[in-house]
Every structure is written in structure tokens, then in C-alpha cells.
Length: 114
Image (cartoon, rainbow, N blue to C red; front, side):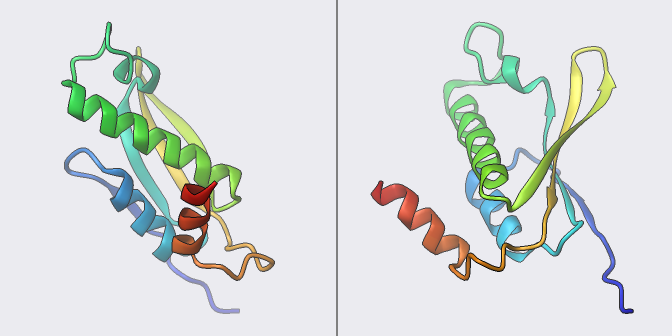
């Protein structure tokens, strides 16, 4: 039985939605991506976030795309507590659904058309 090494990626800067999608498309089952570190619900809320509008909007899109990928069966979403009000948000790649022979780009285009 051949095993594939599992990689964990941690972004050195804030990750964008497109970068997340690119990772999902090429990840092998078990690969892990830390897509945000902080407190996601507060970091996307204007009243509590230290982020500017543009960064907060991008983070909200990233969070939405991560949830979408989980709904499509492409990733598991997990959290690791790093301290009080601080979490690492991690996507773990799942095996690609066999029934869905469509590429990730086809799924994204289908979503936009709906």
C-alpha cells in the first residue's frame, strides 16, 4: 500500500478566496490548510473587527467559500483553539467525490449561474 505524505500549509499573509479554491483543487486527501487565525465571527463583524472594509470583505468571502467547499464534500472544517478568543481555522481535504466528475471550476461556474 502506497501512502501519500500529508502536508499542512499555513499562510504567511491573509489568504484570499481564489487561493483557497486553488488549494482545494490540487489538495490530496488529508492535506490541511490553515485559512484563518483569530476569531472568525468577530473578525468579519464591522463593530468588533480590527480589519479594514476590504480585508473584512475578503475574509467573509473566504469563510463563505470554505463553508461551500465543506457542503460540497470537498473539505472538512475544523478549529484548533490557540488561546482565549483565538482559533486556527483549518480545512482538511477530503477524497474528491467520484460521482462529481466535474472540476472545481465547473462547480464554481454552476454556482454563479444559479
